[in-house]
Length: 256
Image 1 (cartoon, rainbow, N blue to C red):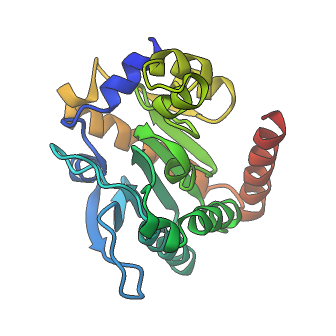
Image 2 (spheres, rainbow, N blue to C red):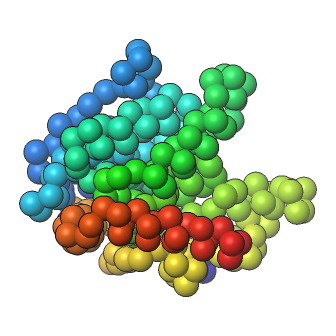
């Protein structure tokens, strides 16, 4: 399917997000709040949940269904890093759910240390001792998406996508307008099939034909994929997992 068609599907406001995934596919969901230092950002959901027999810490970029998605601010990533520490302390796997149109583009976000939080989040994820699974659920634009990507295994919805820069932004740089977004999306290779070919995505969950039209069934399929990956990782020795994860992202960096 053309990249632009998947991008358009992923932007549907009726598309299920992390809350629907937990509602239809997880059990024993316990929401947590804040960074532990008095900050709370609506762009991120932090919770404990169970997929099948495996409990985990969940970090989800929160698509609030039927409304415009809040931009991801630095407090979201500080809350995410709190979740990473919690997963290690509780000896639980970490699940990150990526679904963002991009990080906040504001003076306040920059002054709040957004760029530094993205870098620290990437560093923490690559070095975590616990098993990690990331899910590309919908939009995956910019540093806000990349900040939660590194994991032992990555699962993606069929129409999810990932790019260091939204196609319209790439068009603005190359053509000085936003009219060539579809062309740039193809050139960037943002689709799940392209990501799988580069070894970034390991497991693809189909949409039949669009997650927005079958939210409960899609969320249950995605939850089964998450359950499988979490359970598989729990059987692998920690040193082996960490070595493979490090090599995986070192290889991706050199290939770029």
